[in-house]
Amino acid sequence: MRSERGRVFRTAFVAPQGCKLLVADYDQIELRCIAHLAEDPGLIAAFEAGDDIHTATAARVFAIDVSEVGVKERSTAKMVSYGLAYGMEAYGLAQRLNIATGEAAEILDAYFEAFPAVRQYMDRTVAEARSRGYTETLFGRRRQIPELASPNVRLRQAGERQAMNAGIQGLAADIFKVALVRLDRALEDGGLASRIVLQVHDEIILESPDAEVAPASELTREVMRGAFELRVPLEVDLQVADTWAGAKG
Image (cartoon, rainbow, N blue to C red; front, side, top):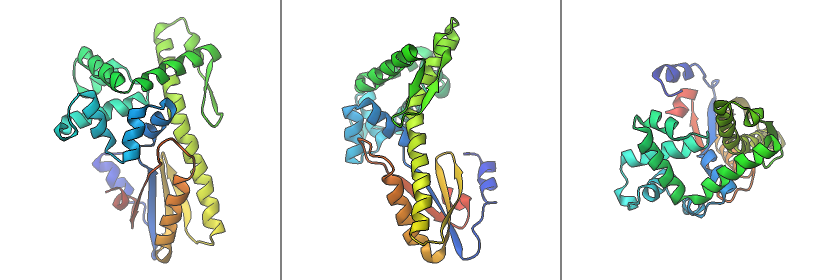
C-alpha cells in the first residue's frame, strides 16, 4: 500500500478520456468510532474542536503542551490510537516502536489514564463478548468468538483482541457499507453519469465526467458524512485525479 511498487501499480487505474477519478475515504473513522463507542470526553472534545487528533492525544499521553509535541511523540500517539482499534497490547506496541515491552506498557497506561473511558469500553466489550460468545455492532451485526471460551491462554487472548476490534472495525465497516449503497442510489436519483467503479478497503473510487466533478464530489461528501450520526463529526477526504496513483499522492 505505501510502497513505491504500490504507487506504480495504482498508475494502471486510469480514468477514461473526458473523465476523472474521485477517490473518497473517511478521515480517521476508526478513532471516531472509538470516541463514539467509549463516549470519552477527551477524544470527543478533540474531534469536535477539529484538533489534530494525534497531536492532541500525544499532549495528553506525555503530559506536555500541544506546542511541545514533536514528530516522535505524535507518531507514537498515532501508533497507540490505531493499535487499540486492533486490540494491540504492550508487546505489539513494543514491536512496532522498537522499544522495550515495559516502556510500551507505560505508554499504554498513560494513554488509558488520559482517556479512561476507552479502557472501560474495552473491558466492558470483552466481558460482554465472553458472557454471550459474540460481539454485536450498533447495526446489530454479530461476530461469534468461540476463542473466548478456549482453555488455551493464547487463544483466549486472541479472542479478547478480536472482541476489542470487532465493535470498532465492525461499526466503521457498517457505516461504510451504508454510505456505499446510499451513494450509488443518490448518483442514479440525481441523474448523474458518475458511477462507483471500485471499493478498496475504506476507499470509494468513482468515475466522473469532467463536467460532473464538482456536483459528484459534493454529493459524495454529503452522503458519506450523513451515513450515520456519531458523537463526533464524520469527515471525508476526497481527491480528484486522472489516475488512482495521482489521487493518493
